[in-house]
Amino acid sequence: MRSLPFAYSTNGFTQRPLKEALEIIAKLGYEGVELLGDRPHWTLNEGSQLTASELKNLLQDLNLKVSNINGNTAMYFWPEWMPETLFEPSLSHADPKVRQQRFDAVVALMDWAKTLGAPRVSITSGRCPGLLAPEIELSYFAEQVYQLCEVADQLDIQLSIEYEPGLLIERWTELVSFIKQVDHPRLGANLDLGHARCAGEDPLEAIQALSQRIWNIHIEDIIKTKHYHLIPGEGDMPLASYLKKLQDIEYSGMVTVELYTYAQRDQDRDIYAAKQALAHLKSL
Image 1 (spheres, rainbow, N blue to C red):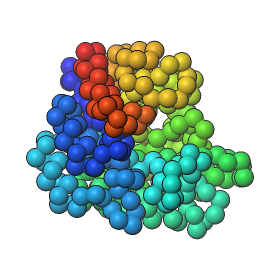
Image 2: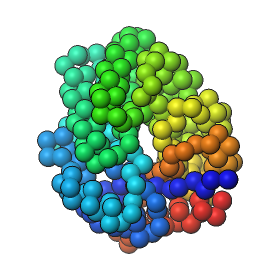
Image 3: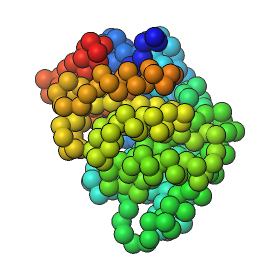
Image 4: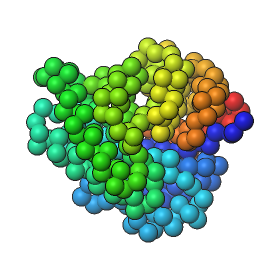
């Protein structure tokens, strides 16, 4: 049976320069990396901390494959980090000018992905603020996503949606329905197994339901249903069963560890988390 390759998201190393983060991830033994399409490693106006050629050469030298470019958040739009603005401007916003802002930003990330030879970009639906009926916001989101899929088709990359509790799309059932609604072969799921648990779902059911459209996997550990990303092995999720299920459905992508909760550089907490995560996952 095929061994699953593990990647690590650079959103777990946001207190370090991108070059240093990539060197650490490679040294620890990860086969791939997810690039954060947000501050501090990428911003809409300034691009990446490294030029495209520098980054491509570095990835090649480190023998790291790109699992995904994470465009889920958009903190580069704001002067400082605030949880309320984490997903805004969103593609489901009531104001068409705001939707266009995020659309242009996602296209810029997709262009970056194409330049790097990265296979995909992930996004989210944005929050459900209660200003409009959810079905209206979903219609806005679907229109934007279809147009982005057309761009993805031209660039020969994939576009994936990550669902999360509290967002407009927050369960696998909603994502399956949305993918059918948009009906574009470039669209799939960036399935975060911890988010499935936090939504009160069985991640095994989410894997099965989305099996043919999973472009990338996020993995971490969770205690009960509290949305706080823990190092694999420190929560109560049966991670081994999820990995086996991914093998059973012949998932061909990478399993990306996402531990932004351990990004602190003090005492190398970020390095410790990445190291422990890989050791535990490989032991499974």
